[in-house]
Length: 351
Image (cartoon, rainbow, N blue to C red):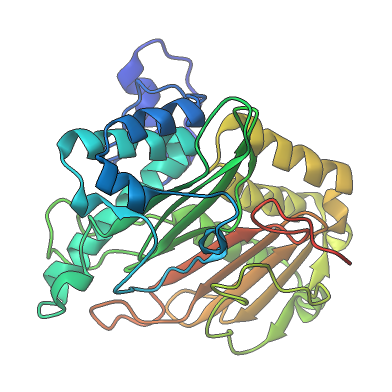
């Protein structure tokens, strides 16, 4: 729920942002860092804190094929330098780099996703080092500068952020993957992640609101399967799927339904810094909101597997919640991604 108040007090302003971004406290967020802090400056600062041995892990060439390797599953090995291998000052610099690449809302989600690993460790005793809030890896592809094109990967379990920066500006932010297990915390295993925490609330709630706002005729177009797909498509692949869009077009929606569609897309765009967020939304506006497709699979109420897809010429959003959480609660484990149908990693796909 958005709070509509004009305030001067900084602490009240933070509460408003929290209300818009989601239903959890922003653990670790630093509101003193401006939304438009230069990614290049933060990356350069991060590199200065590293030893030569650490740089060998954290720094690679822009053309390295590893730039296109991404995934969100627990893995024994990933590219880059992990937080666990850093000292406190280096972790602070890495955190500033993460903050500079996202909006405050996106940064808060990423930090909470990392903290969910500690919750999983507390619930899943015996899994060993695989559940660890410091098993997140930072990789720079090419040296950051105000002129050169370079890439950035920040990745670990349930988080894969991939950026391309040129002329000191973010020019590509896909694939951008966020996930949450549990989707809604239903245990008291870790006091810092209290019961009721819901990291990706808007992504799920707005999807349900939209599909349930459709009339029966509209649902017959939007719902393509009574059973949700098990996973998002092309997970871990360098480029997005190229299937023909399915579902109901925006032009077949009434104004209230269109408003929900815009809010749903906005929940994903809100993860990015202001400049590129607005560029993404302006591109969708230029393409025409009427030309977006919304497709749904599975149940239209919580607790049973469900999936949706929003697709247009320049945006592809996929969301799936079919897996149980660590305590066995059904359909309480979200995967969601924003991709570019014209090419991820700033690579233009050939038609």
